Length: 204
Image (cartoon, rainbow, N blue to C red; front, side, top):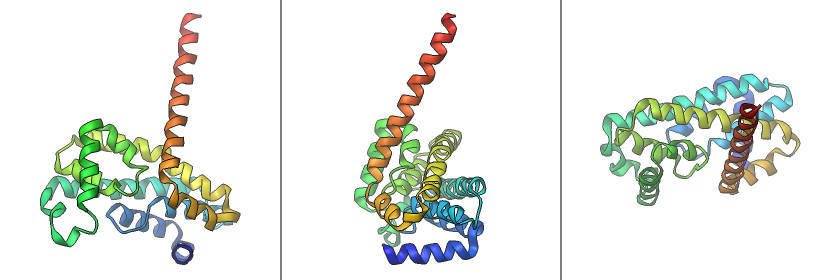
């Protein structure tokens, strides 16, 4: 992982915003790099002063959204033909597809939101959502909300912990489920706090 992180860092240092957009787009299409890693490295570039934090967040959201929508559109247009094609077995494995279909059956459009934090099956979920003809607006909205939450967090992690970037990348690569749980807890706490605050105002 250390070697690949070094190569990815050198690439992003050379091409900055355009490089980040392209690598995130390709991650969305299934290349074997968790897109959280380029986002963290993007934050590291901001830490170094090579880019700006807000612009990196904006490009990050654009990159993941374009990749996701493209994958959804491919699934919607060509459906199971691609999923079942032998050339794509390394991406859409039987195990990943079974998980993606289970999540979609259990949680519906909410799966699109949570798939943002599940790098192992994210692409399979989005492709399956397209193949199942999920409403395009629902897909875009849930994916956008998830990106609006996750992208700034991962970019900030790279920015804040820039001095220890390799250790941070390795931790994120091994602990995606832990990060998902922490984010879900934070969202729940924030929602409860917001509802209680509004309720107290309405009583005044």
